[in-house]
Image 1 (cartoon, rainbow, N blue to C red):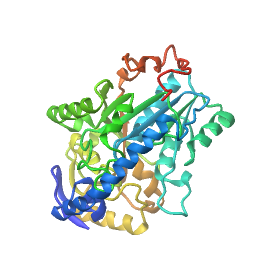
Image 2: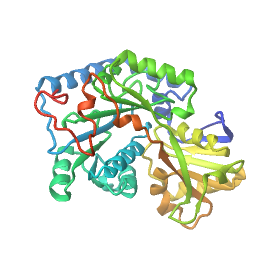
Image 3: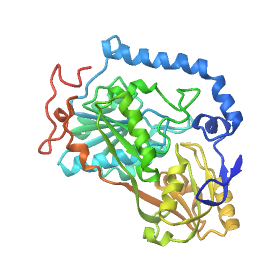
Image 4: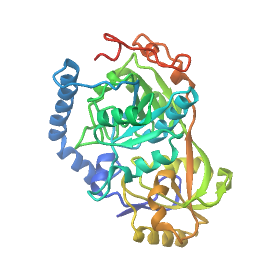
Amino acid sequence: MSSRVPPGVDGILRDNRGFVVRALTGDGNIWCRVFRCSFWPAALFYSYLMIGRRSLYRIGVFRSRRASVPTISIGNLTCGGTGKTSMVQWVCRVLKDKGIRPAVLSRGYALGRSISPDESDESKLLKNSSEGAIHIADPNRVRAANRAVAEHGAECVVLDDGFQHLRMRRDLDIVLIDAMAPFGPGGTLPAGILREPRSALKWADLFVITHSDLCSSEELGAVRRALSVEAPEVPIVEAVHEPRALVEVGGGGRREVSWLRSRKVYAFCALGNPWSFLGTLRSADAQVVGASIFRDHYVYRPSDARELEQAALAAGAEAVLCTTKDAVKIDSVWRGKSGSQQLQCDREEVPQLLQLDTSRGLSRRRFRNGHFPTIGPGGPDER
């Protein structure tokens, strides 16, 4: 475990993610850079493999299947941390407002064989807060889509983390780019956090730059330019995570976000990009006297709850804060302890999302009068 003080944290940062995660995300020291460089040959091979895989799907060697209802994919190019779950919730809300019944299809990430897809952190969070949408966790998204339509009457399916899931065709491909770490240190796996080379971005229909409020205008401009180089015709919009409320873990009391101003708090999270959470706390004028970060999808243990409580007390914190995603995982092991609250965030609406009209055919996929257009053979999704 390493400890250091990052900008905006007035105390010790306990980084529990491990050497490999720090190396791949670019957060580590010189030895992490040496580690990444040693995997560049493997990363080059992996890049060509992923380019070939996408090409084989496009020419029909590998077959993609279409759901019987319109399909929206929400994904990213990197390994975690872009805010896909929040975007899924927002899209579901838009669909329901238009009278369309959505179903969310997720893979159901889990860290052990004893954990079923329905018990993963993202599955629990989507079930609890996807605006009343149907949620099915199944690694086979085609099977999940058929179930959603046949058993639940879904009128649209939303693929959570679907950009690389090429087995299923989609009518709208939304790719999220984290403004704070758009491409990580730059390499594909295993020398970085890119799931595919940047060239895959040209197959997106829309870019949404997340956490845009946590970066300078110069940094946002650099991200926009990088995206325009890879996909000059793809529209770009920006989104932020806006704190909504403070809620006690376990569903207790509720406080306004303004309570955080000048308060001493201890933060913890297990996210792909933990810096976004700490940045949100800083933007709320909280005094972060210490923080613990864990690897994405980490399963909290009772010993973690004890250590977090002790660290918070030692730092003189008035409250312990985590994200809603963490709250669904730590709830069972935190019961009986005091002061832990979740910071609920909401994605700021991006009205341009449903109003774009471009030469790439996105206007033929957008919602019109609360309904989807029919996309027949030869349409923009026949690829």
